[in-house]
Image (cartoon, rainbow, N blue to C red; front, side):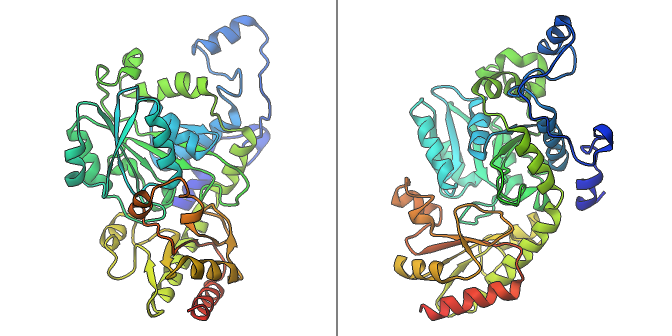
Length: 409
């Protein structure tokens, strides 16, 4: 099956109760059993079933199964937010004294999270570009994983997943990637060697801006060294499945970062149109970026533009698509604000992946806790404007942006 057919007819689409075409919303906290023996078996994983929605829920499980199929993983665990997903994915194998190697072009919230982890003795070393050449000097006996964004937000640098995965595996390390901006429609990181894939489902997967969530997908291929990854040592009997088993039954369950059943239902609805939306969004983004690049003196960043350093990799890795985000530099913070305020069809909001086009000034919003060096490493300057392109008619977007930018020269 091709992508859109698999969304509607894949193995993750079950025969739901009463012939429903969507999974029912199990908006409950607990589940009834006729006998204590039955509940005993469920708690000890000797029988299938649900006991408590913080631990498992049929609506959430339905969403997890569908994402796992699309990402071609071994298992998926849904979380309360994208940031919860990143935090739990990392903490599942990290302890005090461990180190992470990460791209300096991460989303501002992820940088803030890694700074928080440093207070618990987990250090992050940043590579300006997450390549084997720049990561090699950062490797130490304390390194436990490599983490990057497949298409960084908002610097829009494309990660060569195959190359960095091979490098990581050569050092006995897993590769964790945030694939929020590409979604399974553009790219499957597991097929290119990534070991753990993370999404903020709030964004493109949901698509309508009506639910906050995240998800972790375990590729199920990494050969865990249980002496090196001490957090998994109690799960060594599960072999390559140890990561998911510990995540599901320990760190995720105990920290309570579960996805709500209603959120899972809204995400399933959004997921079914992901291919249609992403196709339109990518097409619109490329058209808008190309039109803005024609404006003299305007510095536009979009992976598929001629001369962009990520162009060749984006074309080969994402099938000729460049995602739905572009940025441009207005020349000054004041001009950036004037342009943002004068746009007719762009909503001034901080998220990405909505059906509507969203526009923000990253330096004064999502990067307010970052240093100047951190912001610039992430492609954020005082005059940077980030645009998350929606599904509007491209002619209207192009006219709105080009006329507004030319007016505020």
